[in-house]
Image (cartoon, rainbow, N blue to C red):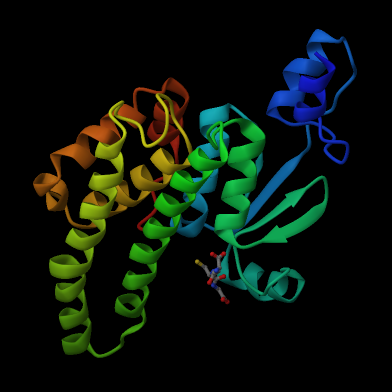
Length: 234
Ligand SMILES: N[C@@H](CCC(=O)N[C@@H](CS)C(=O)NCC(=O)O)C(=O)O
């Protein structure tokens, strides 16, 4: 019993998903941290973090800055960029680090170090896919933009969707890790949503990825969040 407690309640952690239930069993007092996520008024790099909060039913302050507000906030942002997460008033940066932390705290980061490895590699692959799209948005010349867009759709997307499919099929449960939702599922869902949103039909060649998105949406909290979220172009 006490050996388990030492595993679950890290001395420097005030509360986490595991210590929450243990503390309740022991009738200890506990306090959930307050979370404030700052980003722009878009899904962008913050949405997979919002999806973890949604899946957990964890309230968080969803701050969406205008460009003018961002100019004021930028010098105060830890690394001069967004998203930024404040946990009990302390600010942290880097989207993947934030997503990993929130997922771990709220129980969406698997059970073992190997699970974490699979989740992390999946998340990082999705990040790579997203970062391949950035030059297209930045390109001002329309001819070059079209060329970059074509290469992205014809080469980059198939390459990364094949990776996503392969990892998913290595597990046989319909989820990336174990038999329940983790950050890996939410990260792939987020990318799949954005691809279909911008290029309807693009995932028709990837029925496995489309079916996976449906699986993610069988989670009632995720479905309710996605149905109610503010529609934004990005
Ligand atoms: N590696 C960082 C990149 C952060 C980043 O470039 N964020 C963009 C928005 S997606 C940003 O803050 N752009 C505004 C700026 O740099 O002024 C992360 O993943 O959080």
